[in-house]
Length: 112
Image 1 (tube, rainbow, N blue to C red):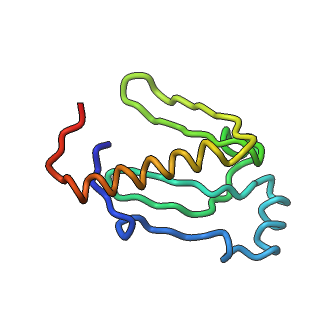
Image 2 (cartoon, one colour):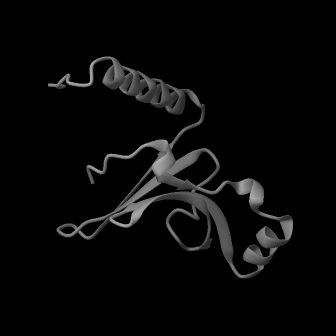
């Protein structure tokens, strides 16, 4: 999407605002709450969303992560990974921190 964004540009809502009653009510309606990050032309948002139980992301286990891409040429693409340990996420976060740091130290650098 090539949207230049800073953390303060992302609307963030955590799961701590969900009550047990909300989770139970969603489950009774056949829905599952998942923390979903969305990006579109209208902005970036991360929030818990109640998804239908047959939704691709709702079917993922607690050690899985998924991504759905909506494309104009290929339609909808979905992918999931199994992440039994936090190591891949930690490595990704470290890479992101280094990228942010290097863009501040050398903002005119061009990656090849």
